[in-house]
Length: 397
Ligand code: PMP
Ligand code: GLN
Image 1 (cartoon, rainbow, N blue to C red):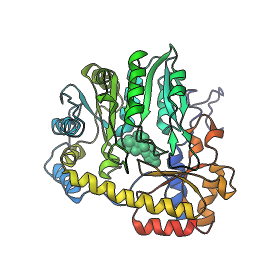
Image 2: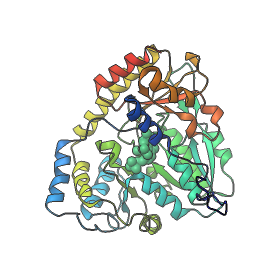
Image 3: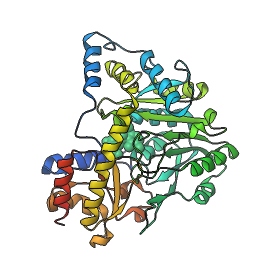
Image 4: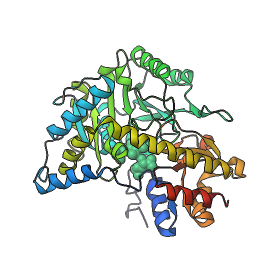
């Protein structure tokens, strides 16, 4: 019997029992199996800068990072991360005590939650939430408390956070806010005013905050990414997380990082050292060089993605989807109700057969499945001709 021993006790512990296989693995496998265009899992179909790839090759050849790098990350990368935070946001972190390199943002999230939570603590996360949040909160034995971002139909507002709902969700057991902005999958970028209010709430209720900022460089139009750690009273209570995967289009390298005050980094490192100890060495040297690329790299990449967003957004709208225009990330959330569709999960499972495109049903990112039942997410980090072809296929629906 699958998943059972002879004593009939499930092999998978009950904390993880509800999670199954991640939607990204399921949908990417479906794309491969059906030969569909994969607008599901978020990864670019063009690698990052050639000189950064060469930097990784050089590091490998020169024997830098081929043996265990230092646990907190190679000094060159920690210094480059600190310099990036200073240059872009005016945040100052000591590379030796306040920066930690991790195996992608995924490990940073896991290590932060495992380090900072006790069983029974409540964690508030914006719903729809990135799928690893729920699993990591569960592994820590804590309880997730979703606060739902609500779609604004008709206008250009996209999904918005209701600050009163957030305030009401805080209880005496709340230990931590797990905040993601720019937000996957909705593309919402929290505004300065919203962040200021969240900061006030965190100080008032003495909460820790973990901020997932992996899309920090992917913001469009009038949106601006502002790290929560820059607000009064927040530096000492915020664990900032980012990753090179999205910023430099090397999602397979899995180089992420944490920046925070020394006591927080010390705590997160205590968990991190027993998860992976360290992550791949040569890539760390290459990402140190990537972080020092001129501003034109970051703006050029962003402008390219904005054009792709516009292309896919108008194609989806023409095909009959309701489109929530994202201010950040490389995802567009749509609503399929206008197409006469009632269920995003069934829709996404059938989409390859119907028109050779793969997408992600947002329902899996909700506790309140009803709230996300007709939402479907499309990634636009693909070559223009691929997006054109996807739009033409979706037009046949
Ligand atoms: N957080 C969010 C919101 C994401 O979309 C992703 C996927 N890139 C991650 C974390 C994980 O990042 P990484 O690949 O660096 O582990
Ligand atoms: N962050 C990517 C997404 O949201 C996927 C990363 C993963 O597969 N875990 O699509």
